[in-house]
Length: 310
Image 1 (cartoon, rainbow, N blue to C red):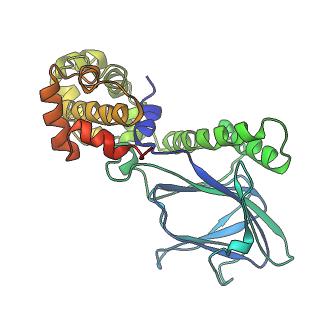
Image 2 (image 1 turned 90 degrees about the horizontal axis):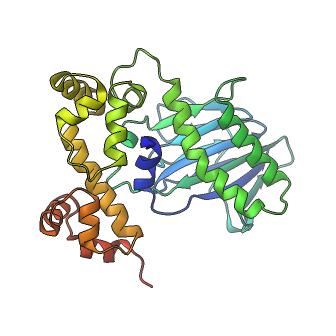
Image 3 (image 1 turned 135 degrees about the vertical axis):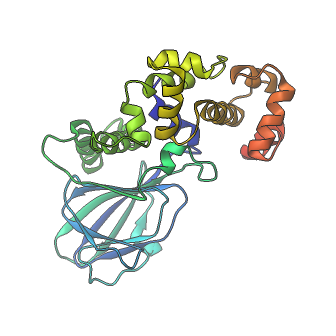
């Protein structure tokens, strides 16, 4: 079981939205705060990103650079930090599936970016997402993260020269991009890092326990049975897990069971009793009580509120 994939899938509330942005100097685009996580990929040219924090320093971006903004904070993209920024006007936007298009600026050097956001449930984010930095910059480096670089190259090729199948290929690549970005960030964390999810996912003792809980949340796991997976004693495992993940093993297991239940209620038509069984609860009553304590609604009401009206 891929813990990173499952954690992100549990938070997804819709498909990513994205826009191809083409700017010719001078240009500067003001991007307001959005729900979810924002991202930018520089396909061609260079530009600057200026974060909303007044004390932040503008960051120069080049071809292949990737920006990830965990909480969708507002910011500016520009050909130069001194260029005045404005919101794009309706006249500058073209609805052009599979991604929209924005063109702005003058007649100077051209920069092309793919900009967008991933729709994630910010009300109850998985702790993995909470531990990410608010802002991630992955500069293009030769030989580093070849899969991420390949995905960016494919995106650029499809957007520059749309052909048969582009409408299906581009959304799939954008969807995969989030996993490539987070994988690259996790792999970039120093080996000396001993706490946090980046360390836990790479740890030879904690990672198997996390995979077991994600693969089979209905199993009546105990600290001892999870420790057996890790090859550590019960006490050593519990201490190491809590230090890395930020909460004790069974507390995380309960969180993951209820997160999985919420996802099943949103996406499937399974009876509530079946959802309870799949998530490790021996009775629908016990499940309903635990779910309401976490989400503030009984499972049936949560399902009705979580799904759009037909």
